[in-house]
Length: 233
Length: 64
Length: 250
Image 1 (spheres, chains in turn purple, green, red):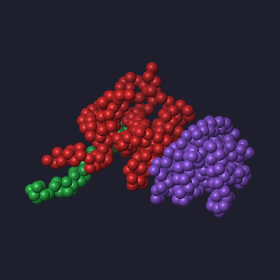
Image 2 (cartoon, rainbow over the protein chains, first blue to last red):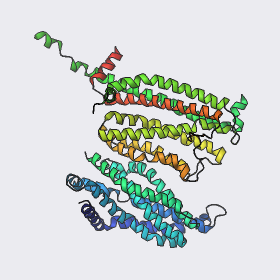
Image 3 (tube, rainbow over the protein chains, first blue to last red):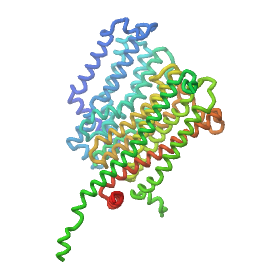
Image 4 (tube, chains in turn blue, red, purple):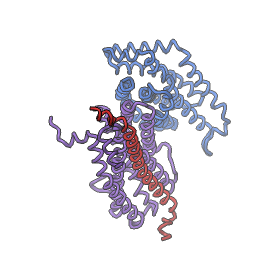
């Protein structure tokens, strides 16, 4: 039952997402456009952010920052779709009343959200790597650390969404709740990439993010299910 | 005394830190008490407002 | 299982109100006294530090405020969790009482830390220092808890939803504590918490511990006061409360 439910919800959410292609493709294209324009907007001297730094380093740091911000924004995108739509049309309550375990439903929705928001980003990494002239090592590390950190972002953002699901003006509060919670994952992910850029071992931050991911993915959905139940009581 | 205030040249750091901490303590002391007083006042108002409804009318009792 | 009487008493709002009210003056007075003594001791009597000179004296307030913030959050998380699982309103009232105290003390810890950092580390702030980052996260968790509560009109729903946030955030407290061991950071590793051989000079340790004790007593005094306020708010309309305020009015 749990696995069936998970796969069912996953497929259904993916289908819904693909029907509304513009919802997820527009932000993605926007991100591509913006990240391509960033280096053009800044003159070469500006890119060397401190005296003594080379312009190349400035450009690379900028690229790392841009894509991690992109990861954060991507996880925030489609927040409404995550739970609100299903609550509004009553399907979530139906699912909760039925025999299907709510936890599996939550996992299915999270997986769909991750596939739609984070996976395209990871695929884009080589492109970003090229335009910001990252070293191959840094590009690989960027992809790996994104792969590890984006599930954490998805889970934490979903917790925020579940807690505020029935509130008006929920988006503002989600920002206050979620942004601090995701900052460790972002900080260490960016750090791992920068270390790889300097050809140093990024093991430390990477392991931290990995343990964060394990904890978040295993325990987060429990909190989400509890929050949904509490909100719909 | 002036040596005490100067704190080896770091006087501004030490006293600012202690001052901010003191301010936080004082605010907390005031705020907790103010909250209780405000809630008690509101409870008293609500109790007083209910009074006329709770007491039975005297004329009804006399009639029995 | 037959529970002792005192356990049931703790579930009774009027009893807790009275108990807390009796404790508050003692806790506050002893706490303030201890802080006054400790502060004077730390500022005027304790010897000068070999490395940092006089500015080290911030050690008598900074770790204490940070510790109170962490204790407040742990208490808040546990109380909110208990309130959520066993649906005990008083537990939620404890959590709500702890939040503003924890938030203000955590804020104080960040500020005093920044002030202390300038002359010793050369910088007020360091994005990427683990302990600073997680302490800032703690502040946001407190504010988030209060903001989330405020967004709900129904108090029971506010209790339950914010409790989830409180419990999820508890994991941050041990992270703050162990962060100095796990990463290289500007902060030094624990010196006082090694009970077998504390590395702090005894002449400095005494006022340090006095301040810790004073802040703790003060925290509980403040918490009990706020708990009383929370009980009065939640018990609006109850017979015992009516009699209490009528008695006070006459």
